[in-house]
Length: 240
Image (cartoon, rainbow, N blue to C red; front, side, top):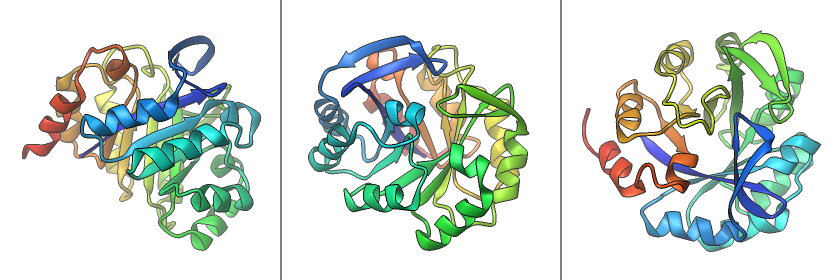
């Protein structure tokens, strides 16, 4: 299982939100690229980058910060947040992004997603954000009636690179991961699943790796020192 340190950007700074709430923000660094270099120096082999302003506004916003991360980190980066047109996907990939995460537009227009995955095969990751199992969109501001698991099933036939499943209720709260929800998602789709939200301890990572998952995004717990990156990388390196 891969570990993906999260770098969430708002106003050009590296921040973390609680439960996706833009009013509950903690700034961890004024230099996101420096934070990227730190995680790579500690062993990260891939990074999860989110343009929080982009997710809210529906278009890429923090482009200079994103490009600096890609250029200075030297590892693959997956990017999410506000990518809702073919031109924006192509632009992000041209910056050197390894793959893009599409959430809101995938829910609003499955036909468009079908077309994009065929134009950019294995370059698009489906981002499913859920609150109590229901899909949330537009930077987590809107919660729909659609089941996250049903959405994953309906789109699993596409040539996607994988799926990021975020439990909003756990995100940034340091309350542990929702193992049953992640297990349900793994069982629902043949796509590689990357878990996000609530990772707090080394044991959380160990339990996720046993599901099995393709990856695990870690944010606040790393930034606040609750877990050390090398420790969870070691857990993932061991057979389960």
